[in-house]
Length: 287
Ligand SMILES: Cc1cc2nc3c(=O)[nH]c(=O)nc-3n(C[C@H](O)[C@H](O)[C@H](O)COP(=O)(O)OP(=O)(O)OC[C@H]3O[C@@H](n4cnc5c(N)ncnc54)[C@H](O)[C@@H]3O)c2cc1C
Ligand code: FES
Image (cartoon, rainbow, N blue to C red; front, top):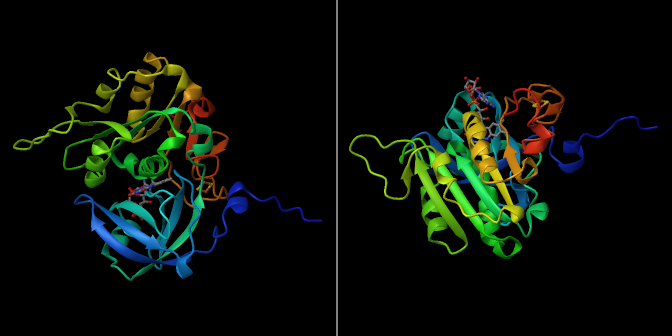
């Protein structure tokens, strides 16, 4: 009798232990610290991700790191990763060029469940690097707008220069699909910011006019952001089962084996990173 129980990752993904060599087909600067890599699987295969999932990226001799998939599955033939140069692996990745190969395991983790979100008004709230995973959902909504109600994007960054995906921010703002509001915490001397407000991302929430019963808010950002954004959304009348969060934890294996990413009884790599707020709000250290 087979006594092995498959994990959710084992059931859902074909490349969970063995990295697949994939080719960098384009590379461009997002900010001085972050680059966007477009990647193709061998033989024109699709990665098969859902919006909000992540992959484990490896380079021989330099280790492995979890990176969110930053493009929607509606974009066929490639996937994109927006990567900050944060240390050993990501530093080496930044040095690679078009035509070079990297190892990819995954896709891993839970996702923004577009079937459950269908028909809802969505408020998509991203802070800083949180726009990387959020972009996969935004692109999905942009490609399939008829599946959703009113679509609102709120994005906050430290300064205008720190904003990721600046060309996308302009495109989304000009598109009739989205209502966009942007903020920056501050503007360095001599700089300017005409595309939104100066202040924390929470300043963008009180002016929203929401159909509260039919709205779901999705939040991805730095840990400090969640508590304050959630408090503002609750003031607007949203309940915890109307708020989706994507949480980042230190990860190693990505498949529920090492315990590095535990939040009490949950593994962020397997049970998350995407959770409904009511799944995690009572867990110590989750938010
Ligand atoms: C689910 C998930 C999705 C992510 N998505 C992205 C993304 O889209 N783009 C992106 O640029 N980064 C993302 N990250 C963060 C990224 O994984 C880390 O920056 C990366 O692992 C650093 O690896 P390194 O070898 O370059 O750095 P190292 O040399 O290993 O470490 C550099 C510094 O970063 C710290 N660090 C390493 N890993 C993490 C981590 N997981 N969380 C917090 N601190 C860490 C180390 O403690 C050290 O201080 C994500 C992390 C997770 C868990
Ligand atoms: S990263 Fe190993 S259990 Fe989650």
